[in-house]
Image 1 (tube, helix red, strand yellow):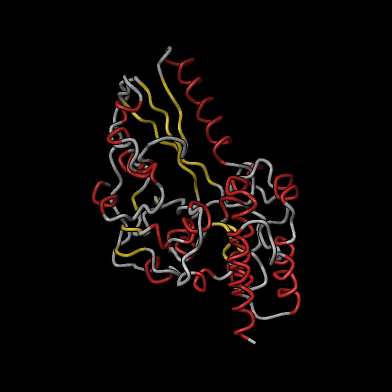
Image 2 (image 1 turned 30 degrees about the vertical axis):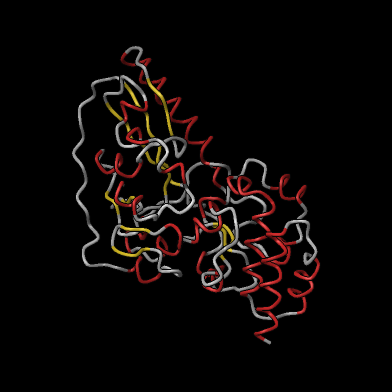
Length: 315
């Protein structure tokens, strides 16, 4: 991890470097921790429009499948809390804390050592019976539980994830340059999207699943059993023009309880403007963009101007 940070692959995610060794040494994060219980929870929504169909429709907006339903942080954290309390009821009180993508925790590494799977070449956790469409969470505990054996890797010579990445963000097996990753660009990056990467983003407005969609192990993936991850607001295949017309009030109301809301309306418009610029030229798209040309945000205006110019260049 230190070598990854030293290469600047974390981009503007300063929090990745902010906690020193607490991220790799659980007992420094939560004093008294002896063991970490790793858990996984399937999230792929069973009734969602086929992802390939959405990616193939330049006028549709592609949103990462994990974000189509309720915010996973609350769902998984509540279930981990309930599990930890059941453990207390069974074996006696223990000091614990639960986490899911919410603290300096090396989730994939811990899950690998716990035997839940192995790190794929795209850096996500893979499981032979469940692929990769799942969330991870942890219980840090002072119980001296028996250790599980780690899972060996099963990627072999496959490099499908490296080859399919639209921006070539997987710069080597098991190494991701987040600065090129569409998930980072659409979710974590607060400023302007790099000019050279905008055309490569296609219609992906929040996250990217391409490396998971081509992974052979996802033939075995399971769909979500919890209704929390069912599609909300038709986000599995919405029209770009319609989403671009949402006011800030619309955005906040319709995405209440969604992980998407964290990026805010300004970046939502920024991302969609780029996708509209990448779509085939049409009067509807140009009118939608023109309506935002004088938006109060300089960030939005910049990306709208780029998209209008790109539309014009493709005529």
